[in-house]
Every structure is written in C-alpha cells, then in structure tokens.
Image (cartoon, rainbow over all chains, first blue to last red; front, side, top):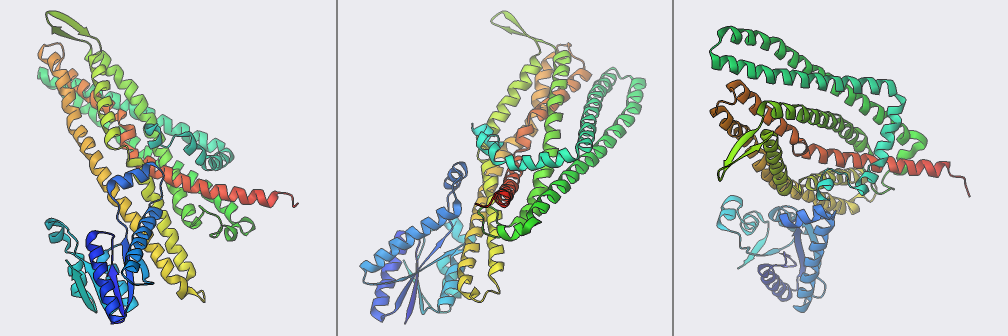
Length: 142
Length: 366
C-alpha cells in the first residue's frame, strides 16, 4: 500500500477516519493524501453574504483551506510529516472517486456521516456510493 | 435603507451604474426625435389602455345593474358594447407590444453598436483581455448584458407609469362609488368617508409590508446568482483560453478546480433563490386569492343595506383589485429589477474600463 486517501470535512467522524488513515500510512510507509470537498453553506450564511456583498467563492475557499490546515496539523501530530492536500468542489462521492482515480491511490479512508434517515433514503450515503464504485480498498470508520 | 437597496437606488449603486446611463444618454441624444416620438407613443398607449380599463369598469357596473333589474334590453345593449371595448383593448395590448419591443430593439442596437465601436477601436479588446479586473467575458456583456439592461427598463418604466395612473384613477372610482360607511360603536355612529380607499391602502400596505419582510433578501440573492453565473462563464472561458498553450496540462487542474468552485457557488445561490421564491410565493399567491375576497367583504355591508347596487358592488370590487394590483408594482417586479441591476452593473464595469483606456490613450505622454 503506497498511497492512502482520506476525506475530511473537519467533523469528529472525519477526524476518526484521519486517525485511522494516519495509522495505516505509518504502518505501511505509505503517502497520505488529505482531501476535502468544499461547497456547502447554510441559507443563513448565504443571506448574510448576499446582504454584506461578501464573496461566496472566497468564503468557500477559506473554509476548505481551514479544514485542510486543521487536518494537516492533526496528521503531523500523528507522525505524518508532510501529507499532501487536495481540495475539490461539488458532489462528495464523485469528487472522492475522481481524486482516487487521478492519484492512483491504494486505499480510501472515510468517516461515516450521520445523515438523517430521509436524506439517506433519498440521496444514499457518500460511503455507500464510494464503497460500491471505488477501484481500490475502502475503509469506512464508524 | 433596505427597501432602496432592494431596488438598487442607494447612492453608491447609482454611482456604480453611472457609466451605463452615461452611454445611454449619448446614444439617446444622437436619436432624440425618435426617442421622443416613441416615448410619447408609448405614454399615449398606456393612457388609452387606462381609458379602456375605466370603460370596462363602468361596463361591469351597468351589466350587473341590468342583471339585477332583469332588464333584457339593457343587457343586450351592454353585450353589444362589450365587443368594441374588447377589440380596442386587444388592439391596444398588441400595439403596446410593438411599441415596447421597438423601443427595446432600438436602445439595444444603439448601445451595442456604441460599446462595440469603443471596444474595437485601437485594439482595446486585446488590452481588456483579462488584464483589467471586472471586465471578464466582455463578449457576453456586450451580447447578453446589454440586451437585459436595455430590455427591462422599458417594461418596468411603463408598468410603473401605468400602475401610478391606474391607482390614482381607480382611487376616484373607489371614493365616489364606494362612498362612506356608517359604523355604530357603543351607541355612537361613526362615518368613515371613502372607506374603500382607506381599506385598499391598509390592505396594500399590509401585503407590501409582508412581502418586504419575507422577501427582503430576494433582490440581493438574485444579484449574487447572476454575478456567480457570470464568474462561472468567465472561468469556463479562461479554461478554454488555456487550451493549446504549451504548458496547458500544468494549469488544467487549477482551471478545472476554479470552474468547479464557480459552479458550486452558482448552485448554492440557486438553492437559496429557490427558498426565497417559495417564501415570496406564499405571500403573492395568498394575496391573489384574498384580494378579491377582501374587496367583496368590504362592499357587502353597503350592498346588504341597499346603499349599493349589484353593479356598484362589482364595479368597486374590481376597482379595489385594480388599485391593489397597481400597488404591487414593486413586488411583481422584484426579480426583473434585480436582473436588470446586475446586468446594468456589468455593462457599467465594461464601459468604465473602456473609458479608462480612452483616457490613457488621449493623455499627453510625459
């Protein structure tokens, strides 16, 4: 195993996935790639931006940078000296699969996100979609 | 302040649109006789439409009065009168479409040719090509934004004028036909003169107030969405521009990511617009259902007391709805105003950049 991809959104679940991925990378001497998929904003945030002439793209970029910076710090604490970082936008499952394919990773590590039952029923979950379509090993951390 | 912000009339925004209006004034000045003739023609059409509306309102009263009296002869006369009124109304509506679209086409043509001439002179289009901030995608600004920015003002201004004179005229109908009403409270009889005028003002204020509260983010969200759409097009354009460069594979990933980010921004604003429109639809649809009923309810006491005929009841109810609709001009045109504001702003930015270049070209070399 030479390259491990871990997706993070800064949540507790994603942090647990990052811890597992860092452990796997250290054990196997593999490179760790930290990926965040940006592009979410609540209605209240959007309305505030609309009224204050704020720049949504820059806000999304800043948020993604912050998540990646936190993930890098966490990975370093866990003994990964220089993890690579990637940022994508849009559909999370599609973005994870796309990066996994481009970076030719050997494993994808994901946290399981706590979506509601209705959202899961209508949209499916990111981990389900990635697990069924990934070209490599997928580890879903509960 | 929020109210003015919604319709783009804050001083800062007016200044931002100044280059657009400056160019417009230049092209109008060059065609002054045609502009005056077409403007006068359009105002004449609006006045004639109002006249027909008043005649139809009177017809409504006479028809229902005849119906109440079971007067077959008058009913037949009214039916015969309706045909020419309807034909006149239809012809005026069609003529209005011709007048408005001719004005829009003329304005668009003149402004587009004016901007193209300035854009192409001295190869300015090469200098603007990605070098000056806020002038990305000039082709789109010339082709689409000029169309939107010259299209909407004609419709909006005519609708505003029409709403204004309609409201004033039908206030008269409500005042004279609706008359006053006596209300007895604690043994005291209170006479409210022009109670339907007061009623329509209160009802319209309530509806407009509700719409302003519920939809006060709408104009800003639409403007942001339009801006995001423009940035997405610019990102796509930049991506295409990089293809064929010897190092295109290096910037490919960056540009693709930029496009994804801009698309995501468009989708987020679109989602917010959906929520905003749902909220305003609750009010506007509720209003379309309740306005006629409120009008009838306000008129019914006088009808039941015998102080108002069936014809007067239908006439005043129709006048109430007409005035109320006229009051809704701002609410009905929220989206078009916001679309216009963002397009005019993009045209302004392009014109301002061209003016900067022209100033540099004519400045004496130090």
